[in-house]
Image (tube, rainbow, N blue to C red; front, side):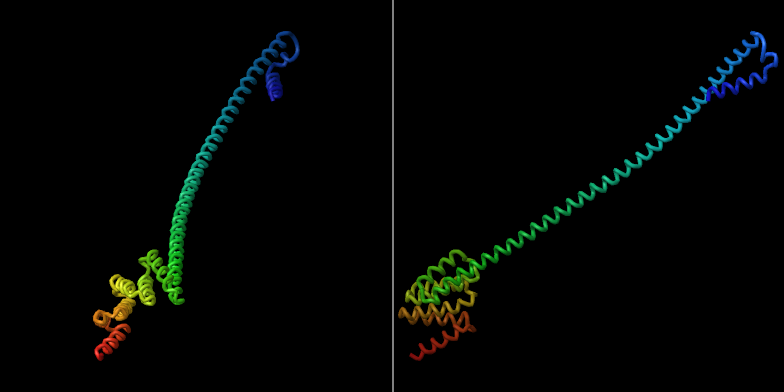
Length: 248
């Protein structure tokens, strides 16, 4: 580009110069040289100006590009912050959900475990009671008393405790240990007076007293039975016994 500009400028200068300056003496050559130098200097200045303009434009373009990049980066940072916040919120919700689920699961497991333990305890309780009752049915009265007393010790608050106490009294009666039978049945009546076994316990007490030859005590017990539990089947038997006693 520089050589072309130089030749264009030189040609223009020569065309404008007088004709005698094209050929001839040293002055013409000197004029040409001077003109060439001036042309070169001007071209150099023009080239520098063009270069400066290009550099400034490049810098402006570069600055504009940098600003655009900065703006894009700022927008990307904003998007990243939004995404990070969403991720953190999602993580928090997931942790909260896990904690809540774990708490519910543990509670559910605990309830099921308690139910399972209760069912197992109830099954063991029923089994212990039935073991004593089986001895009673087999007429093994001593073994029945021992088994049912063990049941009473292990399960004092069991719903089956009144029945166990009743069968202990009956086993003593079957062994003709009437004092022990009376004591066992009196404990039932004193501890569980509202239980369905209480009237039968009083009837058993009256029978034991009669076996011991104490008819007055037996009659008194029968009257107590009819008074406290008048609608019970045991009370009907008590009235029948009292009627027979009155006829004698």
